[in-house]
Image (cartoon, rainbow over all chains, first blue to last red; front, top):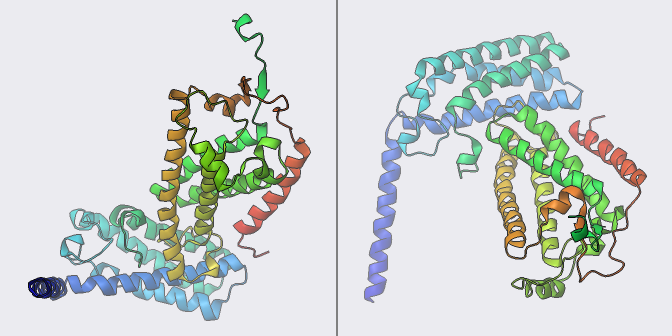
Length: 165
Length: 229
């Protein structure tokens, strides 16, 4: 009887403690950025992949795939620098690949972010021009802009247990 | 020194393709490891193709290659493996010509894991959308990212098995006084008192390797362009 009661109490304590942590984590506006920012970056990655797949296939569907996805990348990239308010790094306690270096070298981070926005805007123009070779070159330039930031400000895949992203 | 070796002729144990594939695989895995860790995926892709080529060639050579390379000659059942394992502590056991029954398990495990890691990599999607695997267009973004995670997780298993392989080689060298590294370089080992008279390796002709090379190169090329001809 005692053991059972003890277990119930212990479970209750665990649950309420867990809820309190969740509550605290979800509490601030900065932390609230993390999930949507991951979703949007994932959208951009998915759009990037969709265009790359067309290039791989060698049959490029401009109107249904390249143009709308290039638009997605450009639109999302416009908000890129709004998604990383101070406090939305790993210190928030929420699982994130964002490294503290973002806020330590914020000027450089902003520079890379703006460069990526520039490449995304160019990609959008190239998509509208429907020039296959230019698209290939611009996709590489855009990917390199993503990589430039990821290399320094995003923890590598292998350092996280998290499989979702 | 000549006299000391006078009555012990060398015995060929590994042919050139086996040795070359072994050391190229070592280099290839090293390059893949480094480029993977440093997100140099352009070169990671190239070294990955090289590894795929080597593993496929090794599988082919395991069917038609020289006698010590063939799977039928060294892959054993659980009884043979256990029998061999019970002699591990003894120092006076004779050389096995080629892979021993227990070593065969680690060979198969390593080959299988290398192939599995490469295949996962073929479908993996990178985080930059820059250098995804050549077959990544056959999976969704989410699936491809998941496979990228499995790609490095399985690579970690592979590293453990490689560590075990190195530990075993060291064990034979120190405890059993059998140098396994030398023969993997020179292809030859000293004749042992326990050797059967007909122990000599039957070498497969080089043209067979060339034929396999052509076929495997075509396969790897087709994979690298995602089968979009």
